[in-house]
Length: 270
Image (cartoon, rainbow, N blue to C red; front, side, top):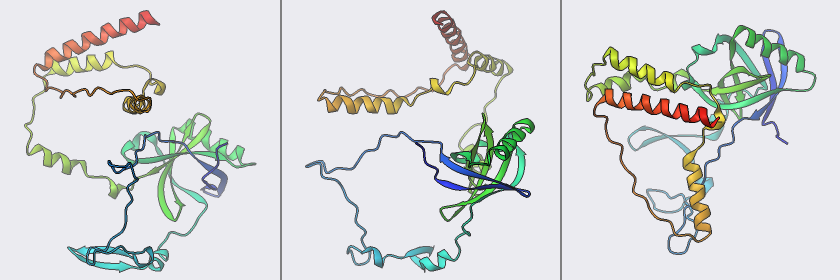
């Protein structure tokens, strides 16, 4: 049975809704250990002093901030602890906004929010009200001594909390574009090319179904591990580099034709 990672209350106005927070994402990355190629011994990391070239015990390690090249100031743990945000069990709603005003670039981690016992009605009221008004809540919370900006939004009959990046953590896209434009030419896109690209988009448009998308790389890595575990020989395949598009119109026409052909095959199969 899933266990909550945090308990508290959603607060807005004079209303408090006791809730529990659950992990919504379980990453399925395949993790490897680093081994010595000669004897398969695990590689371990030790902390060395760059000046003395000796291993340093944990109780002699302090935090330092580099103020200039090679120059540091040290910070005591007690000094940092005084700055920790006050422990709080409240998800404090500050504003309600329309979801389409929040770019996905701000979203970080996802959690399910479920009501505590005897808080079901107030929880349901908040969820239904946000669904009806098509709004989401912008809130702040403290979890594990860190302050988070977050979004609360309805999902089916539940609420979902997304921790968010603060605005000063988002890289300015204009700065990236301005830098890249110095080495790129400004292309001319014709109305015909736009119309054909839109036609291709239309031909590939469907209802979103998350179950049809898979992590193909992870599946292939798992197959490789299974094969090597069974002692099978693996034949290496040379990867082909993608070639740049020559005739854009011809590529669009071929893509549209291929999409239509695949659509007919899928309809027959269903």
